[in-house]
Length: 192
Length: 192
Image (cartoon, rainbow over all chains, first blue to last red; front, side):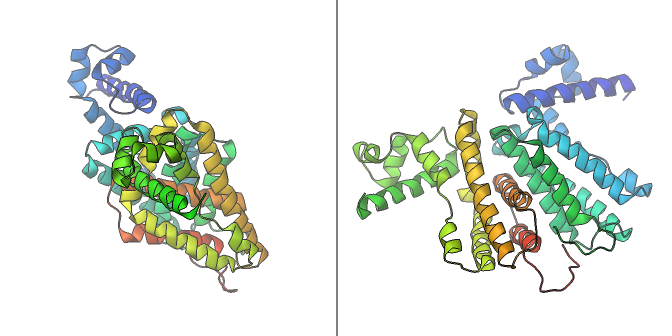
């Protein structure tokens, strides 16, 4: 697909993401997405067959880290970039997809969610293993740490729709994950 | 209120809780609750004015720990009891109220949710402070640790409705919180 098509797809995904975050999954129609993107129905359907396909693609998009691991970047730097991304997301109540995810899950898309969950877990596990290998991370249990990172994040995303969050809540997330993974240069830890 | 009334209220809350977990908040009516409890409409309305009041009461019910702290029980024992309770809840997909909480929050009950969140945080902070005082817990930042405990749990509860969970996921939660709080007798930690 040419780069113009890629840009159009990107725009569709972005606008649709905003709509799903605002209204949940079921209330969003292809017509809404046409309006927001300025595409004709024919134009939109050239790219996607329906809102379900668009939503799945949004959920399956992921922060790519395998390239960075292959390039042997510092594990701690990759981690900090991911945490910064997450910190911003936590504070951006407008973009929380939790409600839409719930609705979509209730329509019976269990296999998709299992895949998303497995992919996210694998991604974190590969970073944690890599950081342990390079000696930057503590000898944590990769699966255990990955689950804490993911579910703690999901809980925050859910509550960020329900109550207003302080900046501190996002900071504490980042601090907890950092303390869980990063070695403190030879110094015995006092604060976990 | 006499003990028979207390028992009736308890029964109403239990049955209603099951219904909210199954159907979410909005789909449950007072009639449904009458059917499940065997109470007449008049009987039910003697106790509660509507489903909103019942749901709020369920959400505000909490695991009481202040008595146990006053009695100077071991902090580690209180912690283990709370973790065991949580572990069972995580595995009990049927009783997850997350969907109902979402719906109820979307009806605009922000103040209630802030209160619930604050109460839960305070409870955990008081236990963590107490454990640090008795020398059983690490010198963690109580608010930071409390947030991890709560939001990690909420994330698990949300996902437990969406995908099937293995026992290991609940075990990992308990392990992570334990490692975050409990001192390992003088031994340098290798695994966090």
